[in-house]
Image 1 (cartoon, rainbow over the protein chains, first blue to last red):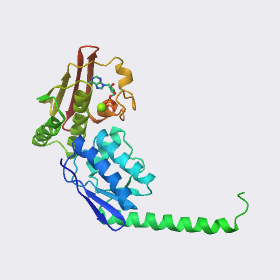
Image 2: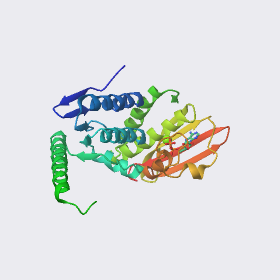
Image 3: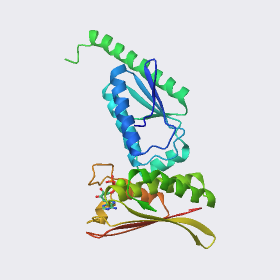
Image 4: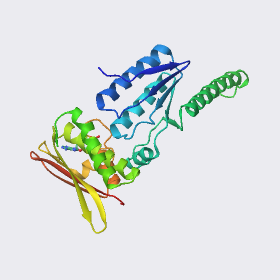
Length: 138
Length: 128
Ligand SMILES: Nc1ncnc2c1ncn2[C@@H]1O[C@H](COP(=O)(O)OP(=O)(O)O)[C@@H](O)[C@H]1O
Ligand SMILES: [Mg+2]
C-alpha cells in the first residue's frame, strides 16, 4: 500500500505531502502519524502542504484529527506552506483548522515549535515554583 | 465521466483543473471550483453510490465559466434545507460539503427526490 513517509528530526516529526491526497492515503497518514508520535514521544509534528493544491473538508478533517490526537499525546501540530488560494478556499468552505498552527515554511514551523515547547516548559517550571509559595489557592 | 470508485476522483479533479487553466481562470477561482467539485463528487460516491459528472464550458455576455453537473440515482435527500445547513451530516463528517460548496461557486442548484436520486449543478464564472 502506498504511504507518505514520516521523517524524524530530533523531537519533531516531519511530513511532506507531495501529492494531492486521496482518501485512503490521508487516512493511512493519520494513523501512521498517531502511531509515530506515540512511539517516538515526539513533541511536535510539522506537515508541509506546500505542494498541495486542494484541501477539501475531508482532508481538513484529517489535519484537524492529527492535531487533536497529537495534542492528547502532548505534541503540537504545525501546518506549513499552505498556498494562499488554498487558505482562502478553506475559510470560505467554513473550515477553521482548530488546534492547528500554521507557518510560512518548514524553517519557520520549526522555530514556532521550538518556541512553543520552550514556552510550555518555562510555564510548567513557573507553575511548579508558584505552587510553593502560593497558599491562597487551597 | 462516470464515477463509481474513489480512484475516479483525482482524474476528475484533474480534468476540471485542465478546463479551468485553459480558460485562464484565476488560481483562487480554480481552487474554489476544484474544492467544490471534490466535495460534490465525494457526496455522489458516499451517499449516491456513484453516478455521472459533466463538465461544460459556458458563456454569458463577456464572461465565460465552467458548469459542473453531478447526477446520481441514489436515495435522494429528504430535507434539502437541512442538508444545506453548516454542520449537518448523516455520514458523521463535517457537514460542510453542500453549504461550503454553495459559498465557493457563483451559482448553485440542487434537485433531489427521495428514492430517485440527486442532481447538483454548479457554475463558476471565470471572473466571478
Ligand atoms: N448525493 C447525495 N445523495 C443523498 N444524500 C446526500 C447527497 N449529498 C448530500 N447528501 C446528504 O446531505 C448531507 C450533507 O452533505 P454535506 O454538506 O456534503 O456533508 P457531509 O458530506 O459531511 O455529510 C449528507 O450527510 C447527506 O445526508
Ligand atoms: Mg459531503
